Length: 79
Image (cartoon, rainbow, N blue to C red; front, side, top):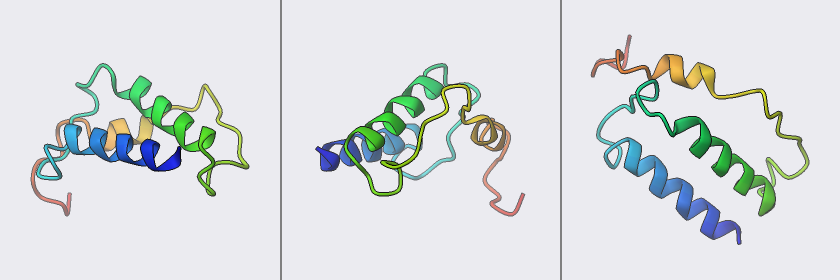
């Protein structure tokens, strides 16, 4: 069910951001890509309107997110 997928995704985001209090260090998170793809797949499987009519490209990973949140962003959001 989509609400379960949404809850799992929210819990995952809370886990990697310490409940929204820190930026995640995605470069240092060895499970990030697999977790990301699992949640993306769940959104498609359970028919989120923005994902259900599109294809997931397996070779297209979240590299931009990993570069932005590489552990070097600090606490200043303007950088």
